[in-house]
Amino acid sequence: MPVTSKYDDKQVERIISDVVNVLEQHGTSTDLSLMVIGNVATNILNHNIPAAQRQAFADKFAQALMASIDSQ
Image (cartoon, rainbow, N blue to C red; front, side, top):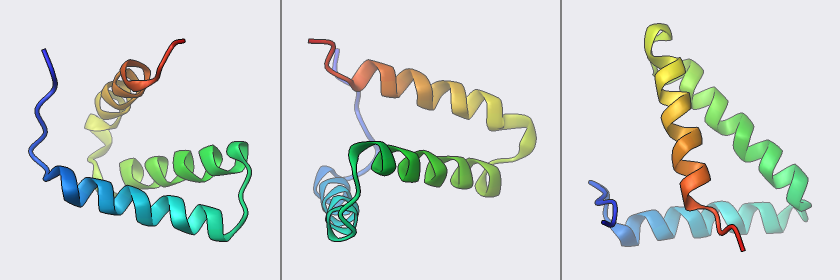
């Protein structure tokens, strides 16, 4: 069963495109891109989620990441 998002697909795709464009403008390598995106995720968790809920949010984020990657 597909996961339903509360966010508009077009808005999500535009934001993703903007982020990818910034990384490309800076000529970032794959590992630097992932490090930057990971640091952004950590920053969001640490500054926008109450401390008592951070671990649960991080676990769900990690599970969603693992579920979304192609294993082939």
